[in-house]
Length: 217
Image (cartoon, rainbow, N blue to C red):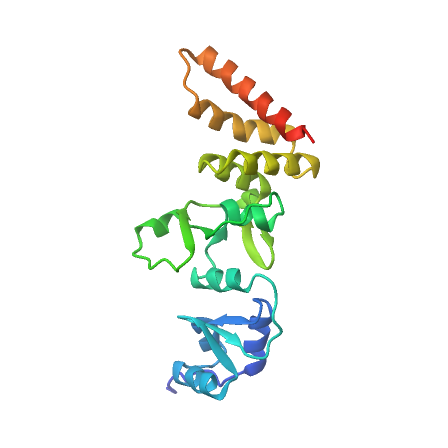
């Protein structure tokens, strides 16, 4: 029986993978294209590759693009993360919020891992599936509606939430019913009332107030 031999290095395959990721590849992806760790180190010394962070490399001469920092973080998360909260607000152009850190949501099961969080990153743990996720700037991101819900849950500044609500409404990114169904439970949870009937009344009033502020010029 012939022993299993590693694939010969295939620069075309490596380039094709990198082209779909802003010029970046992971160690695992490079190995699948036939590049062992010693060979990757050799190409780094030769200047064909650059180390972006542990386990992530950049093709040196690949054209620079937008959101490269986000791509590197997404690859660090083994392509399991989804950008969320204020980072998602920015990617969707829902507000002019400029967060001091990147916000990345990882699968709920990752909360049990011992992770070394990259500098300048805030991690959340939740499963983001189906219509709650989309793509922007070459990376996965929470949908506009999910972003609004996450920001409301995380007590992001009200002016950012109102701006996002207004943008979602004006651009038709979610229906009025979707906005009501997803936001009303959050409003109920934040404001206690003496009875379920009073809770519903308070929630409806708060929702109308938020919608009115969002529609104002």
